[in-house]
Length: 511
Ligand code: B12
Ligand code: SF4
Image (cartoon, rainbow, N blue to C red; front, side, top):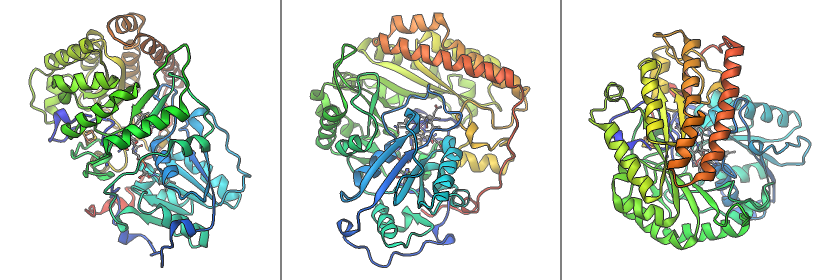
């Protein structure tokens, strides 16, 4: 969450942002009406395979949760007569292309899009119907439809039963657009029992995080973020009691106590927890009794409030994930931010959180057009001095669907559109100030230095959660060492030529 810098636009890669993926005016694409929607339970039973693909360059260091939230939602809203199976490549699940599925449903992000297309192609060779959805396919209809039978654009809650009916009746259309259906005003809760039964995960201990969400959407408009054009500005909140029940169910079906710990670890996947402070407090009060640990994305601003910090800790929050993006006041100004003394302010907030028992994880962003090697040094010093837990350092990546993507496309600033490289660790935008390869190496060296032995020791010593901090730091360190080695060895990697802006993105948004 980066809305401390809002409402102005900012450039960064973050995790925060919400329901109408509005890359294309739906009228431009073929979206045929389903003549008559039958009661969902009357559709003939289908065998559905849901797949979460793993990007070819996706590292294990990307903190993975037990299942992708988009898939969790789809499973939970699929009418009960249908038979469901889950495959998650992030956990090494194997795909059986010969399976007798009526429908293969694949979720996409940019970094796993090419892998998703490969899987889709292979299933289609076996005569299976394939539907692609998720944030990447939503904004790249023309590209995605070449690999599947149908593309779903935007939030799927109010169109999914139509898709299933069309599959059952043999009338699947190439395109389903959330904007042609009623808006998702209330988001559904998760059916953990059904997810557990369909998934290949058994019970897990504290080392795995169980995903849950409490809110969807975000009212802000950061230009680097997909949310404003995707799940959208309508901020939807689940009822505290409903959240509590889901936590209890998830604990029962997914969690087992071991010597490593007795409290399950949940990952709140909200884009921006805390936009509605009163509701956030109600949720935190309600889940206090659940006896869990959890992490959540939240704006650093919200953490200035001592009551919020206290309620977070009392509810079991042990780690907040904050989008700092940059700590350099000059850089922040260049992004259009005018706030002064940000470093001092951040330091104080982080210290207060730690004292209260809350670790602060930080996301930081490097922009090759602005940030110098000295700026990288400054971020590194900030991470060390403040003992930031699990720092995530990203190279500016304009993802399709963001305002930034359109701006960079227009200005010709995107130099590489090999989606496999969209992990936020690769230089895919122009770098004029420095040699691009040297810049990439320098970035990785700074990232690795955030996981030097000395920094890890300081981090473990100063933070309340020691074992997890140590284990994750060692994992990150190992991944970064490997990455740096391969960039150095690989020297200049081949660059995939930029693609034309998809037709669907050339016109203004529908809302
Ligand atoms: C939570 C989160 C994470 C969690 C994931 C937890 C989990 N298990 O899901 C963690 C921390 C692991 C994570 C990591 C990263 N993330 Co993240 N993350 C998010 C966040 C904030 C919320 C995702 C979410 O839960 N959304 C709610 C669900 C319900 O939405 P959904 O998945 O889109 O699904 C809906 C529709 O898309 C559709 N749908 C989805 N799939 C399918 C499939 C079919 C067949 C159909 C019909 C429909 C359909 O139906 C669903 C219900 O409406 C988003 C922001 C956002 N707005 O999406 C960023 C976001 C997805 N992350 C992003 C990025 C960049 C990353 C990282 C690269 C960051 C980094 N520097 O490491 C890594 C990559 C990890 C990986 N391997 O993919 C970007 C992705 C941009 C892109 N175009 O791909 C986003 C969009 C944020 C941004 N910058 O705008 N992330
Ligand atoms: S738009 Fe919202 S969710 Fe996205 S980065 Fe900004 S504050 Fe976070």
